[in-house]
Image 1 (cartoon, rainbow, N blue to C red):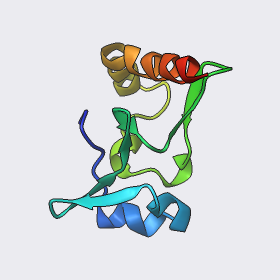
Image 2 (tube, rainbow, N blue to C red):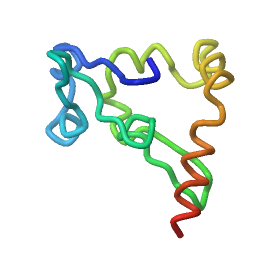
Image 3 (cartoon, rainbow, N blue to C red):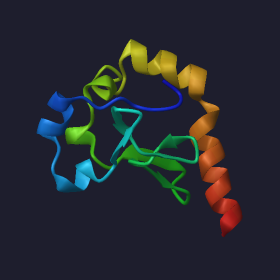
Length: 95
């Protein structure tokens, strides 16, 4: 979902303490903490104009369904293509 990335018990079992630091509980549900409209674990490098998941090996199951290069990933990227670019532009403006 655009608003959050759900985290279940099985996801927490896989995460170390650092990865769990990205998880918050809201309204009785666990989700990845969001920052500027995106998952806080998404690390953006404005110089390289790239992004990657800071907890990739421990990411929630919902993120596994978007494996790099998969058709689901390609479809999601088409729909949300501008979001990471807007985040990079925002970081560049901050200087």
